[in-house]
Length: 188
Length: 182
Image (tube, rainbow over all chains, first blue to last red; front, side, top):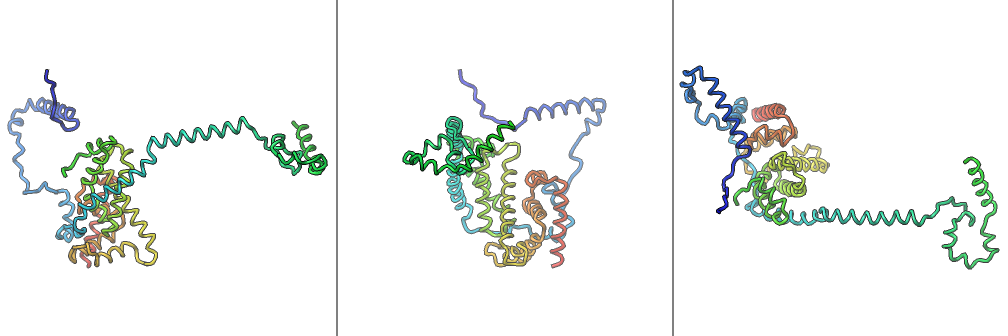
């Protein structure tokens, strides 16, 4: 069987508009059934218009008030270098192609890749924050206020003897720090 | 090159393989029309050339998001108009050395413009047009030279038909008076 191929096309909404027009004609015929003479003598050729009247008539009418403007020879007084449009076509094409390459950096695929990278980076950051917590305590300028993990990280402490360590502790500040803690606890 | 329908251009653009083809058709179909539209706003050829390039770059970047609710032609005109006006405003900002408004400078430059071929009366007409406020100048050029229907103009300039008609008549009256006076 030979497959039917349609090589013709129609204006957009053709069938919709055509059916409206047919209905309107039928309606008009029905309306005028009682008036046979009106139907018979209907003619559009009884009224004439000046030649070329409809060509740009709207514009002509609106220009009637402006005599000087109407009298002018309406022409384009601007010019372009020789072969400008022909050469510009190639030039525009080349520059747009360059631009398209830049745009492609922001293509959907690249944006997805960037988004995925961001998610992974955020994941690491969250993991680091929640699973390796570093307690942020107030710095009271004394060894006593340092967190245990921070102390362990300080390898130089290993070389200090007990007297050095004792000197590093400012007792007054330590006492102050402990008092604050106690006071806070009392109110909690 | 035979002109390709806008619908076809958009279809070609949507397929990556035929994008270049869409670009070629788009430039071939619209560059001249857009150029003349821009030229009447910015007056100078080199400026028009720059604005035309920027217009097509904007069009190319935005074509992916172009909604077919409006016509491609209208959308292109709108971009070209905005680009041309933006260029003029930029020029105004840079025009700090002169006390005269940019429109006066443009009108003066026309006298020695190598790419202005009009006679004395045409020069006078352009000078008259350059005395109009920005919007009126746009409307006047689109109607007087391009004979653009008001409905189409309304879609490009996003202004009501009534307001455009009024604007055109005010502009035409001013130009007429200018021509009669000088």
